[in-house]
Image (cartoon, rainbow, N blue to C red; front, side, top):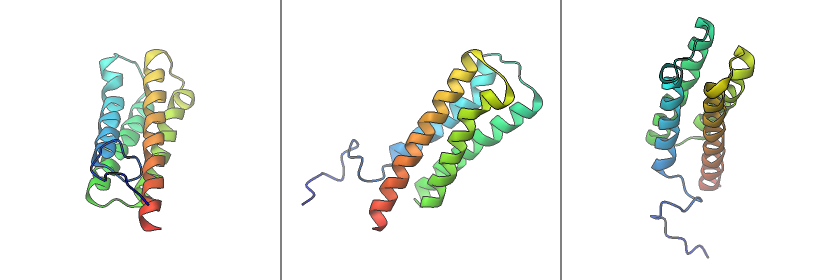
Length: 122
């Protein structure tokens, strides 16, 4: 018998809007990090990072409207891409740490939401 209160924010067995908002904010923070940290990156790196971060933000907003497993899968892939971008594009220092941490958080949130959505459809 499940006695968990479905309205508690910390009940991780159900998909909550704060998870999507957190993904959105993390994507936004990763997007503005190169500007805030005055990082000098190639045009290719900036474009790829922008595409990844904007994709994370759009997918997070789509999750608010219609929580589906495909959004979680794509969001997890974007998180992995963001985590690997410092090695692929060859940048380091604080920006690399920010992007690896942001990518890891997005990945964890996406996997959590994927698990939650699977429990809902089962």
